Image (cartoon, rainbow, N blue to C red; front, top):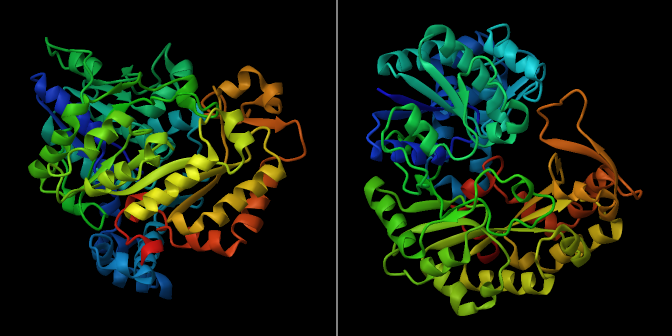
Length: 524
């Protein structure tokens, strides 16, 4: 084998990794002998194996752990079937039991759940900690999985090159541990890493790859990987046609198998001043030709026997939405969801109904604030009156809405936060799910180009976390700060019954990945 792609843990194990599938499809079309392993799903199932749990729990587990282990097969079945989506208590019980069991692994301060991984003694932002893992001087709770299951599998495939896809902070610590193990066991294999997180660290890592990697790939990986594998036809052309043949779809924790795909890379808007995509895009913007998108959805559905698809775009382009809305017959029987902007085209009720008829079941919308002044200052390009009407249209068409709110942005005041609360309360009947968050300021945010104009007195990387920190701590010019925003969120937003009810029905941990399968709650 020329090249093996690996997705390290730890991520939500709800769908196969699109990045690996995109790269695998491109490499194979270039004539490269390649394969892929989703080590994230494999590690989760390895740690939930009953015999391994018995050895970790010991002969006298607590009553709660004993019950969780006994219920584990039923919990896995519940999250892999649609029955639990109609019974919230059963669904939450399944998530809780599996999280309890995953939480038994690891040393003090190390915690794994179905949606998160943290190590209390090691930081993904500290190069020294990453190097300790790579050199085998420290370990994670994934060590036994890597050693006993993954490394033998890699040895059997005998690749000449191994590429790790590292996109999220939750993966950083396990990925460096895995990379060190691979280097020691396969010293002559070329070891590379790429993905969104690696690209975010480009400014720090571009001069010399850290041990144990031979090379880092920043940005799109298709052409660099094909070249590393010796493909004479390596091309810079972006690929949108994924190959999921490596994935065991029925093993993922999802009420039905879901395939991710993308109609675009990058973001067509790129004007939100708080977003890293505006300042340092991971991918230059490119999109699937409009005419080809419905066929791509249909071919994926037929090739892999699925009916549910997740469009992973930062924001699905309007041309893509128009293509889908006009392909109702071609997409008959399919269901899809993804992020969209509050675009004026969604004011057209017939267009929104066409989207619903084409299989659109849920749309995620980044509103961020109910204050027009905040939206204008952040470059969101959203008119609140338009947003309210769009929520009504989606509700009327039977498309569930998943709305994202972000408090604590530079220049925000308590009055702005009150406007956000009032907007959510007023339009609660048309909002099915909510994500409430406090802003983290990206290290390269365009807000820092003129900080005083945006209400920022000073901003700096956390000294303990630099130079790999992705965010900056900032001091606002007024009295309203992140702590104020957090108190407002906890007391005022979650203290408002209509808003609290929306948040409460949002699926724990799996959030939008599973909300897609729940009956739209405002229409039950």
